[in-house]
Length: 97
Length: 101
Length: 264
View 1 (spheres, rainbow over the protein chains, first blue to last red):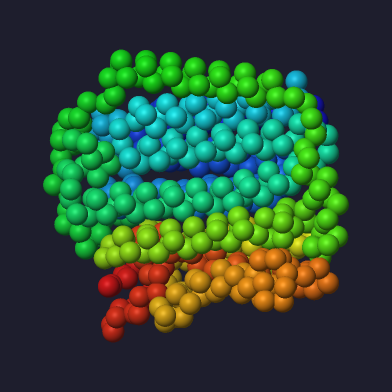
View 2 (view 1 turned 30 degrees about the vertical axis):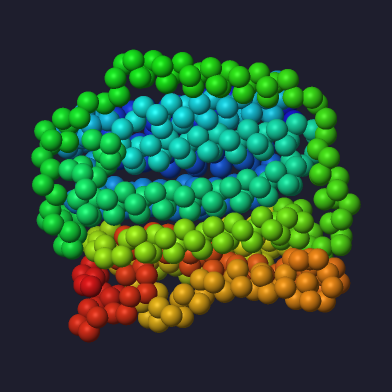
C-alpha cells in the first residue's frame, strides 16, 4: 500500500494532538486532546486495514479511558472540571506542571 | 514511501514523545496520559511492521495489539484509582502531584 | 459536563489546597527537560534505524493462520487467532482485566461522587437513545465477530459503554442486580473459557483446544460469555467514581434512578 494524500494529514494531526496532550498546560486540555488523538488514531487503523483494532480503540482507548481520566480529574479537583476559558483556575493549574 | 514506513516511523516518534512526557510531567494524571500516548505509538509501529508485505496485515499482530489495548486500559484504570485513593487519604496536599515531595 | 452550584462530592472533605499552594512546586527543570529530550530523541533514532533496516520478508505466521483457518470453524482471522490459536493470551488478558477490576473495586471503596451530567431534557433524550443502541450494537458486533471485524472485546466495550453512559447520567441500572450476582457475572466469561479448555483436556485434546467440528458454536458461546464479563469489568474499572454504576444495594429512601441525587 502506498501513501496517499490523507496519510500525511493524519500523521501530522496525530503528532500535533499527541504533542498537545503531552506538552500543553492544563489537565483538562490534555485529556480532551488525548481523546481527540485516540479518535484520529482510529482513522489510521482504518487506513492500515485493521478495523478490529479501530473498533477496540474507539470504544476502549478513546471512550472508556477518556471517561476515566475525566472522572478522575473531576474527583481529584473536588469541583467540576475547570474549563480552559475559566482562566483563573487553569492559570494556577499551569504552574503545577 | 509505503504506509508501513510512514506509520511505523510515526509510532516511534509518538513513543518517544510519550516517554518524554512521562519523565518531564510532574502530575500523575499527565504522566498517565503520556504513557497512553507512548503505548499507542508501540501499537502503531507493531501493526505497521505487520503490514509491510502486501495483503491483509498480520492477524497475529492484530490479535496481540487488541490484547494490549485491553491490558493498557486495565493498567490506566488501576493507576487512576490509586491517584484518587491517595487524594482521598490526603497523603499529599495536591492529589495530582507525585508522592516524592 | 459541568455542574452548576456547589460541589456535590459530599463524601470527601473539601480540599484544603489554595491556588498558590498548588503552584508552589516547580516543574521539571530545564536541565531535566534537555536531558530527557535528548535521551528520548536518541532512543527514537535508534529504534527508527532498526525499524527501517528490517528485512523485507513476509510474515511467517500469516500463511499458517490462513492454512488452519478452516479447522477453527470461524471465518475471521483475528477471532481465530484470539480464541483458537492464541487462546492462552486471551484467557490471561481477560484475567488481567478481572484482576484490575477487582483491584479498582477494592481501592476505590467509599468514594462518593456526585452525578457527572446535569440531567435535563437533552441528556435524557441522549441517554434514552444511547442505552438501547449500545446494547443492540454490542449484540451485532459479537454476532458478526466470527466472520468479520468485531468480537468479544469490541462488543464488551460497547455494552460497558452503554452502562457507563447511563451511570454518568445518574441512572444506576446495575443497582437493581444483587452484587453477588454481578460478581458471578464478572467471572462468568473467564470461567466458560477455562471450562472449555478443561473439557478439551479431559477428552484428550490439548488445553484450550477447540474441537474443529463444533468449533464455530463453541467459540461463539465463549465470545458471548466474554462480552458480558468484559462489559461488566469495564464498569468495575471506573470504580465508585460512577454514581450508582456499581451494584450497591440502594439505600432505603435513595432514589437511585431519579435525577441527580444519588445518596449512599
